[in-house]
Image (cartoon, rainbow, N blue to C red; front, side, top):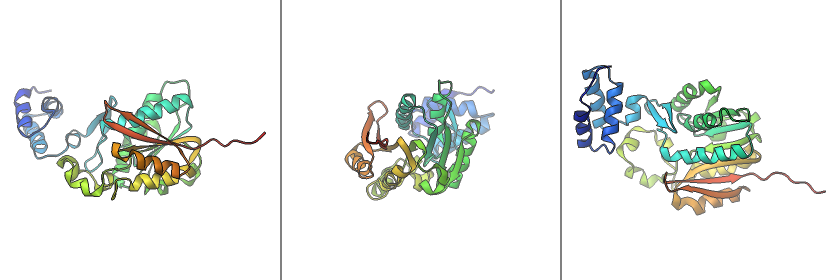
Length: 271
């Protein structure tokens, strides 16, 4: 592996406004096989291309998740979805997990990796995304776990036999209100698909559809977990309770993340 002047690369990236210039310089230097290739990688980053597209992977919960150009890059704050799902899984081992709006499949991959080696067998994993490029990316990432990836619009993408059988439904639906898309960093706004960013007028268009369908698709006692913005807590709670689910909110100050959790009641019978 050739040695590069990482300090010089850091200065170039810092001048371009890269917040984590030193870390990015090391990663770019570790990916380049020649000085000329490194110059090309630096030029792409300085032009605003997401680092993950340049490297071909993103770090998420200690995993290297493959990322293709044009696919939503997993955010570190989404680790709260995995934390909450893992806690549910340890309490009641799931048999079926679905990663909806899966993008790279990072959430399903991280959850099953977390559960691997535990006392319970690993659950079956399905993932779905409306974007065919994302679905292809997720297939590559989940192949080692035997995860099945479907392409289509929310629940329409899933095999009908999963209806009423999903124990954990991860839903990283977009939640940026349409009018605020122009305020997103150029990395996201100019490179990631709008379908993965645009949450509609109030940011909850897909969350609303997910909540509405969840009660039918969840197993009794199963839960849907939806990432939201802090200002969306009242509306998201109303969406879940309106769908007949028991709602709670999980927050992480460290991650700057908020997750709305809706749980389907377990059927009870009289004596």
